[in-house]
Image 1 (cartoon, rainbow, N blue to C red):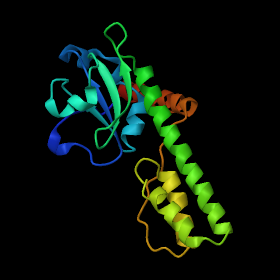
Image 2: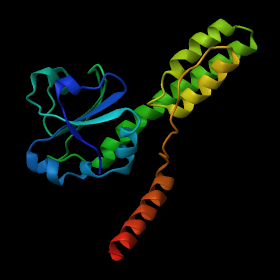
Image 3: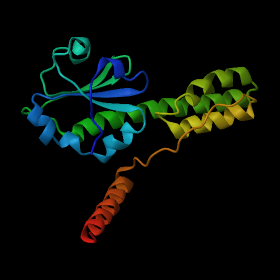
Image 4: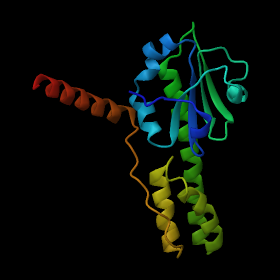
Length: 196
């Protein structure tokens, strides 16, 4: 189950990404395919906040724009829309929503890879201050990209930069491995229920 939360201004996220789901009806929230997704659930643990919101909320008008509900919108924490998934025949498909989140995360990961590579080149050329400047923003991505942040933190440590902070392990996002994990979890749940 995807950990969707009802949007509230005081608890709006300050970092990472936000996936807004503007449903057409409360019935849609109960029956939509967006309720179950291992991919979205894993990304929700990586600073991608899953938010159900009312399209009539005045503060969210800049995000929704002229889109017809239901609609899903991936936005930055400051509310700038990144990508939208419009409905098809009045419904949103979870696969389409997963794709936009995955594509954005992969694009951001590629940017971080480029920054790490650039920093290594600067270190080779003896430009340690330049490398540190490139590595620090990567090391700050502890929530969205823990593995990349950990790599940057290691390099910063080698360059003599102090404590970076603890970085959590990254979840498995590969679709094949995810399918295997889901199958094992289902079998375990079935076995657990059978033993009750």
